[in-house]
Image (cartoon, rainbow, N blue to C red; front, side, top):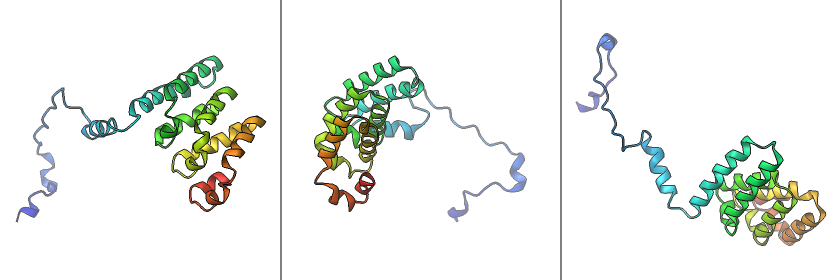
Length: 173
């Protein structure tokens, strides 16, 4: 039967050579799955913004020690994501980029992120990836009293619903 046609070679067949694989043409990428996945992702909203932000984020990780370089890179990240931070915070890579902005940014850069995300802070606290951004805001914005008060005001009235939500409970803790 045909079901046995594709068997492993027998022990005695070990010395036999297999025919060489066909060479790939130059226009076909070596990893077809990766190229297809990237093509699908490119049709998603804010893909270009997140992709450019990831490139800057990689540079930020390499140069996390140099203050002036770090400030310049975070400024570029904020300029590129302005107006779309709420949508970007819900994506896996975008969330990590925003976390780096909050962690390595200065007080004015954090307040920029807080001002843009502030209206939807309770909503973002319930989402899979964006709640990590809210946690970073709680950790790093607690350094100034004005930002701490703004965070508390944005979450006030939502504590009970967040506490009973599977993801939001992590923010309340």
